[in-house]
Amino acid sequence: MPTPRSPKARKKNEWEPTMPPQSGLVQEQNPPSRRILYLAGGEDAPASQDAMIFSLPFAQLCADELARIAPDLVVFPLFSATLDAIVVLTRLNELGYSGRCLVLTPRLPKPHLIEAELRSYKGAMEIQLLTSDAPLE
Image 1 (cartoon, rainbow, N blue to C red):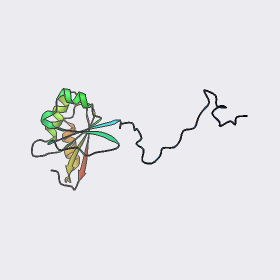
Image 2: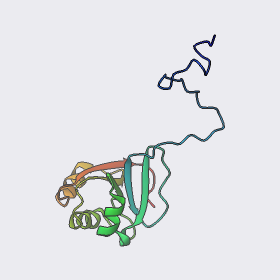
Image 3: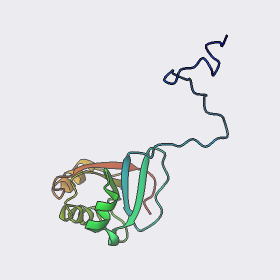
Image 4: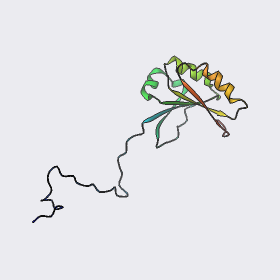
């Protein structure tokens, strides 16, 4: 007589436990759902397991690229050798972007004044400053 675990005793719709993943096997993972656009001089964006990060030189920012990337967050420096945050915000506003923006800044004496000025250019965007002692390149 077949036992309940034997193949002959199993019914077609009976639940069958799965084996836990074995080490060394590649498991298919869902891609991250967050999409971040890093606007800078074209250097590569850092890798992340939590988000898809796209790096794009500001000169290449256009409606097609913005639609292709469809970012949840746009990250850019307050200023660099080639652009500043006001120029970026104005361009994003012209392209109809209405998501979140994270502006990278060095330590500032009165960051709330800078943030207030940036918000006057923002259109429908949400702006936040991120201050660091790390040098901006």
